[in-house]
Image (cartoon, helix red, strand yellow):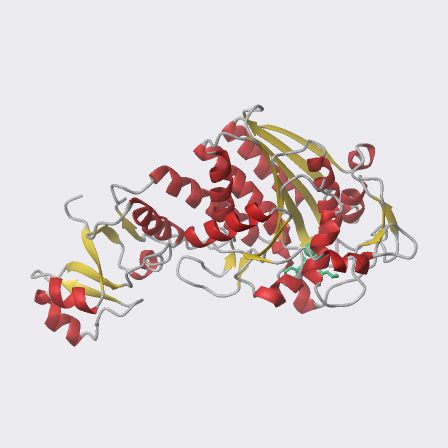
Length: 446
Ligand code: BES
Ligand code: ZN
Ligand code: ZN
């Protein structure tokens, strides 16, 4: 569009060299090209003539992500030329920065500044990554009264419809019949029936990827009830499920050549007369017995049954995502997801693509020496470790018991929620590590 307003990325030198006509205005308005600042420069008619954005030489996804909501509504276009990958990043950041959650607001968010797509940006990727991220944000931010196991199922069914995937759901008492005892036990005290959602898509002869998500739609802690402060955000305890649904949507939208299976254990960890109790002993789908040291360590229980099922088909890659432990947040903070992996090469790749996709994850060890902390005097294993240190590691070691050791496996322990707003990442639910995982899968099937 000819009347789009040009956005120039500048630093102090480029500002001097390329924008001498704007020097007086920039000086008067205190703009020197510093990173993270911007300057609207008027034209002769008093309209916005151009926008100058202070930027370093290395741009990332977030470089322009604050602009959709800071610039006046209108159409903008990038004046600089960028590499294909940088053009894609900048355009993606703009889209991610255009998100608002206004489902419950009478007054909806109005028109925002829009960016013309740079001609060399990968629009298919940007669309897929944007829609998937919006899906994750919507799912996680939606409060638990409108996002129960039933709504997670509905979301998966909508995806299956849209991409012609097959879907099967085992719910309520059928979980017992079909031998998912721990998914049933965790979810049985809720008025909203627990369920296992099982979606398949793609070419059965292509490399097989299985995604498993923790879909605890609200985690009260169960009878080992959380404190008010600890419970407050627990609508987000289905963030792992949301992230694997978003990742699946990306894979299907882009059409990666894979045989995809998605397993979501969707439950609500509630309190009632029939709730799971401390020191109950469950028999897992695997057949081993689990003593319940704490009903608040419910995520690993539902994941265990789903992972054992996932393992039974020997996928080429198995990934689970879960808001599994507070301990992972103590270790890395809320914005950096932890991952555990039993394959060195996969680990190295995930670290690398996390950096290149501006979607980093940090590796923590499956330190087998801690495995004995999960020993139980009366059952094959306890669901919590004795001792209060290394909680994200012992949780990962618990999960590892339900994986066949020869299957490359990644376990992501994420927050799925922004406690503060950053450019392109508003406070609220969010995907964390999803684009990195997509890149990893893409590289492995290329
Ligand atoms: N959903 C929580 C983990 C969580 C808490 C993630 C806060 C992010 C922020 C999980 O089900 C849980 O309660 N885990 C307990 C385990 C403990 C009882 C061994 C935890 O991390 O405290
Ligand atoms: Zn819990
Ligand atoms: Zn939980």
